[in-house]
Image 1 (cartoon, rainbow, N blue to C red):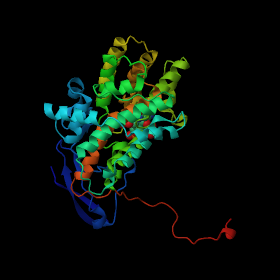
Image 2 (cartoon, protein in one colour):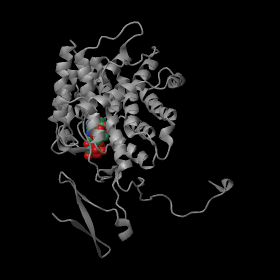
Image 3 (cartoon, rainbow, N blue to C red):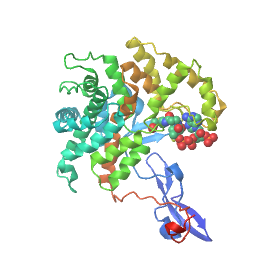
Image 4 (cartoon, protein in one colour):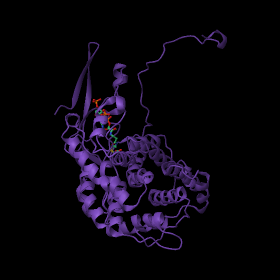
Length: 429
Ligand code: CMC
């Protein structure tokens, strides 16, 4: 394999180094291109741009492969837990028994938000979207830890990790309670991560919620499958903010904002709304598919397509398999599952979707499981955010501890007006 690429420009030849990753992924290193040639590269949407070197997550989108720190997602889904996966992503290795116990204890110790933060929830209108509350409250949390604002924090990073990872779940549950006008439920130290979240969401002050193992396991799986996904929109946002030396909480709060959009983490909510609309209108999905193929309709088949996967998203495969099982265990019949399966079947035989390699992504079936657990639809992106927090933290760490640590600062090709004079107000037409 050549270790350099040649570029011919204006009669000159330039040699550019080729970088090869541990899975044989190749990139042409253009970091000196502007100095050498005066040109930059243009790649709108960054579909061909490697923004960093990372050792956290590997995706082969053509073959439908996803691995965290080298371990296949299928194995982790089968044998691991969300907290263990969080440790793996952030610390770079599977924990020993003692490390896992200590990490879990640290999460428990840090599960409560500062009592004064509770009053911040009062400032939001009753129907505020929980993603707005989540991002604001994560950012506000940093105000209670002045250590974070020091340029060289002396506190061990793992303490910051434990606070954020544990409290993101507490804030999320409180945001839901607030949006329903319900009293806040405090976490219980003897519950594990996911059970504690369901307890804070659904218990009442006078009665504990009955924790159903099938529901806990299903939500745990959803958290785990969302834990990282290399340089997606929200993770790139976190890395960009982190590169300016903003603190961990500010960086992750910006990730929540980026995740909120319907083309990213908001897609799980959009999928259920789409399936509900199809159900309401008594359509078998054909009308919606026709609209999704028509660019003028402004509609897309939500939960389908992916920038990187040109094959079945491995996370969607796992969730789809788990859907029937969870609904069965919880004794729920959901007509939306049948509609989703039918949509998938029709789309996968349709030349529009075949030619563009559009397959179900992680969001296509996850909402059906969340509905079965009783999670309201506006909380779906919040669940995605809780799940993605370990990945954001791991990426934050990589930026801050990595070599070089240059601030992210892309360039642009300017397409606006050329030089022109200022026209005084009275002379303008
Ligand atoms: N329905 C209909 N057409 C689609 C869809 C879809 N869901 N997705 C892509 N296309 C078409 C698109 O119109 C374009 O067609 P053409 O080549 O004729 O112009 C072609 O497929 C390529 O699409 P693109 O917009 O260039 O692809 P992208 O890589 O920029 O976008 C995506 C990826 C995920 C934003 C997009 O597929 C989409 O909008 N999907 C629906 C939203 C969704 O499910 N998002 C969740 C993503 S997975 C979870 C996460 O990481 O956030």
